[in-house]
Image 1 (cartoon, rainbow, N blue to C red):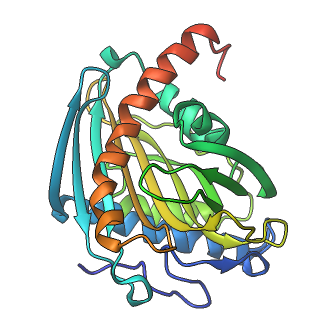
Image 2: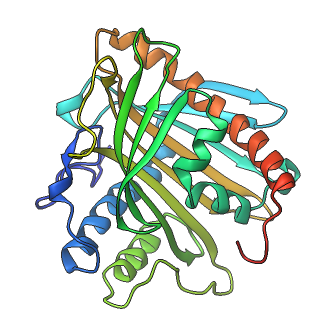
Length: 289
């Protein structure tokens, strides 16, 4: 696979490798725009390549529908033994959720909502907002069933609405997105939807070292990188892709970590859809929220 996910200039590869918080440029600067552009370009390359990833396990639930898992060996030598594990699914409105619902509960307050439907998450704490609702640092603690000690993670969370495009995540869409990201007057709101265009957004995460969250026993500091790509498809369907590369560290054998990943990530599909339907019914969104 050819990918732009390797090192670009002074930026680290998009992988489960920690970067220092001090390396993140302040928002509103050209350097910040290049920082965001680097990780978006890396994610676009991964997303476009997913049709060629190796199929692994397939899952089905009445709530989540069909979920196909795939695997890509790590393209980064520093973490060569940890692959990228993908799940992809498509959801029509009969699942109870529209694109706006996916955006409402995944694009915004991502970590806060995630704690409500992933029972293994014990703590979510925002450490910093580089740019509100776009680039934030979160400290999350998990109790994972496959490990002997609890794990915690410190993550850079990028949640970004992309410019609407007829072919989401295509090379043309990437070019339009990067041009928009680099424009001096950009806001977090994307351009208006044109005829024939589809809306999309991404949620990107990668590990970051932050001074307000040092490693503290007995928890083990683990790392992961992930991307979620959500887009409108034909009819009323929503395409949802998510991939993660992780290292739980400690003394857990790699084959156990890697073997558990498809089931873990597939579970989140029906967990999210079931929770979101219940939450939406109990907390009806008002207006364009």
